[in-house]
Image (cartoon, rainbow, N blue to C red; front, top):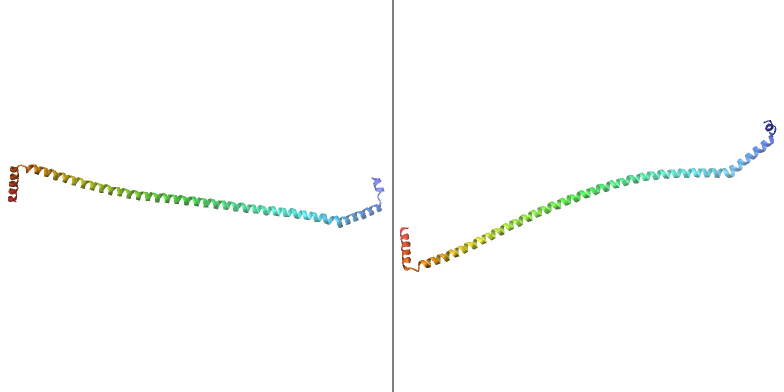
Length: 166
């Protein structure tokens, strides 16, 4: 260590200090400002990137909430449409049943009227046939009765008795 202390020279320290100051001055003049600017620019870039990331994160959260809201509204609208469709279907089915029952009732009434009309026509036809047969039978009976003269006179006598009694 003694050897190092003996080599100490004030001139050398002086020149080293001057060289250091010149290097610092040159670095300050030419290199320091671009380095500081580059660091500030990098810091600003990082800060802008972080701000953009935060902004993107907020935008993403907003879009997610908006999508969830749209999805919820779409589900509600779907449920409403399904409900309306079911109500419309039920209404159409009920109306169809009512129309079918009304038409069925009309057809049944019409069939009953037609049956009644046919029945009345058939009864009238039977009555006409019965009366025609009765007249035919009566004509045949009377023709047979009046063939004999004695029977005719007896019948007239009976009728005259009934007339006198009344």
